[in-house]
Length: 99
Length: 465
Image (cartoon, rainbow over all chains, first blue to last red; front, side):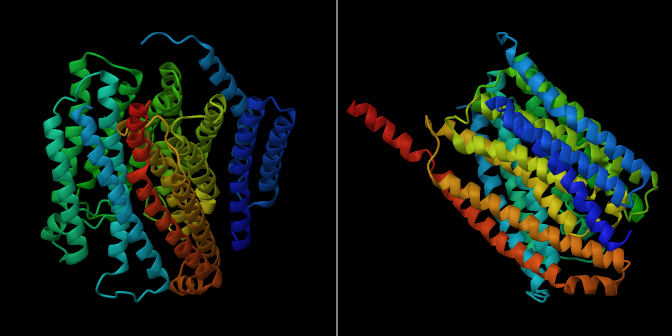
């Protein structure tokens, strides 16, 4: 791997997770405030994460297996915040048993 | 207050003091990168580094042990079994740490023989403590395990958090035994050594801090037990599922079979996923409480723990964990950057949050706030961000010019070390390290003072009323 490819690939991988984190953060904030704008921003962050994944696939010299893994991972990121949110809501909704 | 809670306070005091030693040794190490001849043959770089990383492990470990001694009697409604032994061993532990530190500072090195291994330095990173001290750590940890399990047994009570904690204490103590074998084959030695370092940091400590955060959230925010326990189970499942085999991401350049690289890369690349869940959880908890709490310092340090863990371990880790990147980044300042950020986010912030929580209860303050904690919080976190930023730049330069371009030769090492970006990164690390040190001083000042004026004023107000 050339030094430029190394730096570009690493930066894209970092951005990939950062975009995923921003998606989770803003999604949560949007749900709390019932803000459509924030939820749309969260979706934009997720779309940017997908774009970063596409850039890694196109530009980086990573092997095909890692690129496939990254794409699958990007899809998984899309589900985590909404699923987590539902899980947290359902956990908090259940009545507290006496302990 | 239970005796074990008084013991917890002593552990926290020792932990915060060692945190300070870690900061000073770290600053000194940072200076060596810019002035390599500093204190040459008097107190060389490697000794400052040994102090820095060993005090890192010990202050966090003391923080964890103290936190368990604090929460355990509350959880079980009784005094900890064997508390007298635990109290004695605390002083033995502190004395051993002081003796080892004195040996590192004064004696430093010895001949390559058994005496040096037993009484000066084992020579293995993170577990340099001489063998007698390592044996002492085993005794302290086993006593700690006995305290926890015997107390639960005597109380005839078991909670979800305690189950997870007790099960976690088994690998926590067993893995430390990895500090003892004397292997002459370096590949074998490093192979097993990583089991200790990685499994402690990315498995058993993660679970331990998960248990402590569960208790913290229950006390700080009144989160129901079933919620924190359900979350704890999920976290443990995900962290262990991704963390254990993530071990392979350390197996570079030490002669391990190649399949480890793929296994390590795959599982450690999954590690950000549970951390993302943690971020969502932090937002949920913070939002449902409208950022309102009677202990703002603890609350903000808990938030810093969640986000620091995600960015430090997740983002910084993912940048370099895939084998084709890790091949070049391994062992550069890039990994140092990741290590600083991840340790701080995952553990440092958590321990500080617990200390604030405990102080509010011991000082009987209804509200915990003020200004100085904000300065401590800000300076420490900005200082850390600056340090990891500087180290990241320096590390990327090393990976690019020393490894990818230069082929890891000595000449390439020199070229990369003289690169102005590398130098700038190291200067930035020193400057922000100094900021971090100021933050530490403010933190200590705040820990000594917070809540005291309120609790002193409260009786006066009551008597006036």
